[in-house]
Length: 431
Image (cartoon, rainbow, N blue to C red; front, side, top):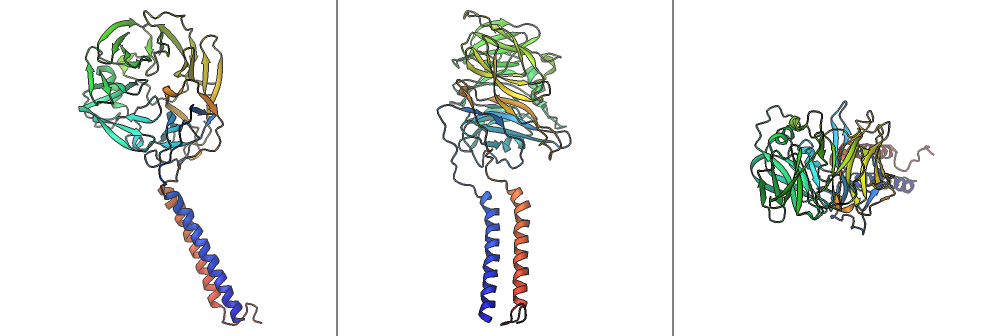
């Protein structure tokens, strides 16, 4: 009987220690950062058929890089709690990552590179001496100097990834920490600058003041910059090649407003108060449809593209095809492929706007959506499947994992204490 009791105690001990070990593994494994192995780029990028819902367990892109992205967007709600995330969705798999560095700067406006591998952002609340460039393939972040401290409003990224157009101006101190403070100041007084990411040089173009919107030509060496009611046509050195008049109530679609064949400029309605208001719509939830119209580029020719309605123009898949964000009557958002020849639309992707935000109390909203423009030709949709969000954050594991481990240890102690109370050589029944 003594041997049987000893064996029982050993079995209980082994079972308890096994439970403890499993609990420790469950807590520790998600905390371990594996070697960076982002998804290998496929021949053609794809959009998820449905974007995943909101989750506080989404990993940081700098700590757990997932490779190139097809989309950069803001997601969340602020009805009861200010819970918004800047996210990137993978171009080669169902990966989602949070841009924590942007959250640290109170969600500034940003640009996604045309090839989907980098994110560039500044600060909407204060002047900066550099921009921040995050590499989504390895998680590294580096500063891009812009000289003396200025407010910066990012405008456009060239298709070849080399140049970035931005507007810059001195701004006063933001003593009240107002959101979008820089946007409102620079939109009214900012001078165009063209940044060469290869050399680090930044070329000011004083004639383009105040620079409101900009878009590069498909060749990456020319750009159109809106100043007042005119588009100034420039090369990357700042030399002018003419101007194009815009209707009084229209503005260039930023970043993606020059058509893929170089023949047209896409325009959208101006804010109600015009450029003087400085309203850029940077953090506005994307819900309202608007009319997109097209202005011919002088000297290029070609048929005039008809107008149509959408929430936002996202980019060009072909000279006669564009991708747009659209919304139905109840606000459900979709990304659709529009054929400009006949106006037909084909939905590629949908956004989950269910009540999963703010701890399940609010619907989710989308803002600051942009696609990797260089990955759009021939883009298709893939089955969304399971969302891969990366390793769980430390705070979650500490909050949830440690109590689980504690309960397991307590159970082990109680079992071990009970086994020790049994007299040696005595069975539990006393026989």
